[in-house]
Image 1 (tube, rainbow, N blue to C red):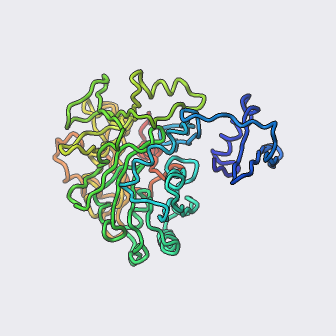
Image 2 (image 1 turned 90 degrees about the vertical axis):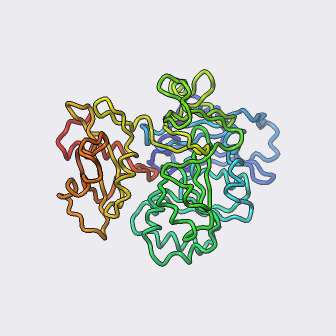
Image 3 (image 1 turned 45 degrees about the vertical axis):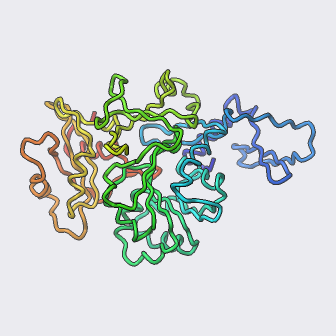
Length: 424
């Protein structure tokens, strides 16, 4: 686990080391033909190394594929960060399913700024395929105006593959003069956030192949999509199941829904996680008796068999008796050239339970007055439209959580506060 002193990972590690089971834990590093035991003392902030080579009294345990191998830390975007346990079979297993799609091998040089302790940053690709990892501190990429600096690194390191989160994709598309720095990039992969069709501008400009894939900390890689025909992409596309992955969509009663209808995405595979550390109740709430993992994400199956992601069940708004996903409102607003970014959130409404609030970062190149947003954007909907925003709020930038994802909960609280509404 990568951990800086006093950050969340550090405190998680402290809890593990101070627990009753810590005395039975051995941290062992194997390098060629030498074995070393490392014990870290948090109080003294120092480590002690014992060479175990040719030490007969040390007996290493037998390891089986179904044994616990690693904990990933979730981002905490749906609450407190959790430690997700994977087996020796599971943690690198589903990675192999993406090999053909990503065209990655031992000669590849892969740029990814995600921290090593997150599933998106864990070196599965590099353990599995022998590729070279190029990484920077993710705090550098989250800062604005760093896209030229990151582009220089990608160019200097001769990267052939790269993973970019949504905010870096947006920064890259707005940049000018960086295209030549990406001449060696064969494949750009995108995941962890909902895909927008406008991101297809990357193809041909910054990469030769664009791969959208969907996965989770709990289930690994699940679906993937790539196509040279830009018309096949659409907002939210996540593709078809990878080999050996079972998927179904269910309604609120747990029954499978017909093709074309929205339902919660459920996954079953041998690569699924086996526990939330010290949270058995949470595990039973997430994995049902049929061994199906309930992701909390909502999707539908397109006529051609590709899955389209609509959002999360927890993001669904209830306006009167009508259930609305923020993404169906966001896709209308983001099509306007005056809008650089938009997040739609529910705010309290005494009569209808929720009202729709559109939080917008306006484009710097367009002249839309903040106070006129209501008038300017209302024409996009009929007066009686059920998904028409009641409020508009301008943001300079959106707050993000530790892994760079937009923090919808924080935005909703800010919006309710600015509107003087009691937040739920």
